Length: 235
Image 1 (cartoon, rainbow, N blue to C red):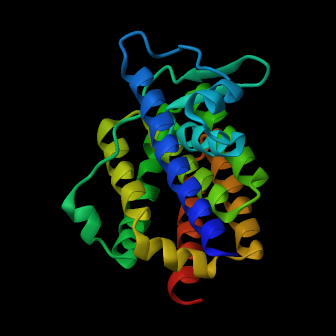
Image 2 (image 1 turned 135 degrees about the vertical axis):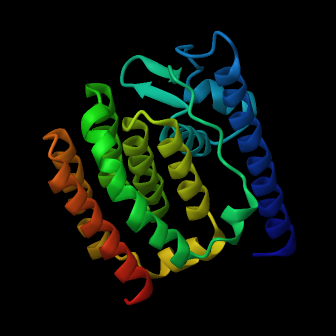
């Protein structure tokens, strides 16, 4: 690659990153409007033209927003602002200081305890959201996409507890998962075999929750997090 080609490629990537941020800002502004929830958004093609982005960049940005619960997409109908806006990401100094080990230790003690509330309070819509996250994770073609829907599943379970404090704690966990140190560690150990095992474990958790079996759901959550902990630090 000569200098001019390299320079042009870098400039294109910078433009795409800027335009992607603008697209995300636009959608979040629509979500924040008083009449935002339920509003239909433009098509991928319209977004691509409006923000001068490749279709695949638009698709990735919308997938991120969907996983965060900001939008929902209905086949044959279009893309809509989520009826209930997701809580704003938590940005606290304690999250930035948390190590991967501290994150996993906290998850092992708190996530199983949240099961009781999920079993009691989850609605059919909550289970539908969990199933959607499971399906999207299993259909993911990249590790990044799988991790996105993995995190979305855990957030969907937190939302199903219908408890603001539980949701806030899970937001902290989600923010801690985005740390560079945790991401590098995870990327080193997640193989296709481990990914398939995580998918099986996720299905077992959701099946137990749907059965309103708190003991089985708690055991499935502990088994999943123990497996993740072992893979991260003992693999």
